[in-house]
Image (cartoon, rainbow, N blue to C red):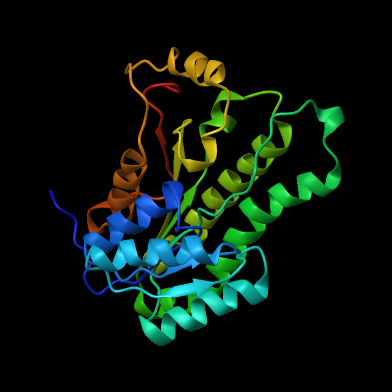
Length: 251
């Protein structure tokens, strides 16, 4: 079945690269209008914009740090002006995620994790809710991670923030269900993208050996899960997590 998003506008944060770009392109190719959001790297954002345009997607380029109220407001205001009211939100933007023993973290780093994975979704959804409630339709799809389900260590800052994001999403799902708005989660496993290019090959090989399906995941695997959860066909699915990790968490 080919999902259609004609008449919809989707914000996918951090969608100039990696998983976010795959998600944005998939939604756009299915008919949604999708802005390209970047925080700092304008050159990369411009390159992604060209890729979206070549795919026939109605888009625009918007700079905005979505961990700040000003950045979120800029993203929504420009998107609404150029593309229309937003009814699909995919909080995806992320930052570096080093694995460290707890003694090597400081609170400032923990706060960065909370800003990306709890504060940013909160700011995005709060800003987008009035239009969704007016339309009586909306989709919020948080990109979480398998690390919470697998209790990965030493990774406490990232795992804690992702756990908070999951808890927030589940509560929001119940709060927003009466308004025709669903809130779900896609939890990828380790899917190598551009920012993993310098990761040690031995670490990649060790993870790859654990994947039950016997292959690496690719960004399109995550995008396909998002397409389903954003679709009309998933209107009775809310508060759920789809782990896209080849069977690493069969529970």
